[in-house]
Image (cartoon, rainbow, N blue to C red; front, side, top):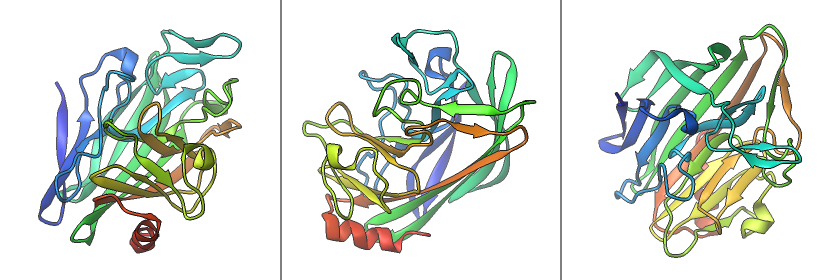
Length: 272
């Protein structure tokens, strides 16, 4: 049975964290944030859309962990392309360390074929930025629980250039027109995809997301609206036995379509 935790920012409910999802194996079951909204109530996430059923709002998903799929859907196989494989893993909620209206800290297990590959500690907090914007601050640490090194890859590291997705990913709602995407010095999917930038903005007609992270940005606007920092953009990561991998993504969620100057000002107000 699906279980979810309401998420609040100040006196507003801004969404829900589904920590025990009831999902088929092909979707790589995992906790996710959906629905999320602006303070004014505009939807900013989409889950199981018709174009990619395995897109689950906003959350952490990795397409290749030692050959196991924690992203959902087909697996990209070198010299073969997207392929249906029985290799899907699952992120299992283990326990709450902290749970409050404005966020939580939890522990999770990443398992596949009965084997635990990773232990995760995930922390999320919300914060009010202005009367029209709030902040979602998410960090996670993955610890390799296997006896040897663990390879984290992506379709790009397996032979599909430009498809280095994996890590934190935000699936935004589809609309009649694609959202705008820009950084401080570039605009458009082709200009920002695969680049590093202190912040990136995805702007729909009624909402704007301003994300900050250290990894290269994976961006889609024409095929579907989605954005996230990529763990393995071009080269795989290797986590040694007992080793850890830590990332943090801070997202400002604002009402309205912001321009570059407004997005830069909002990024400057987010937690560093």
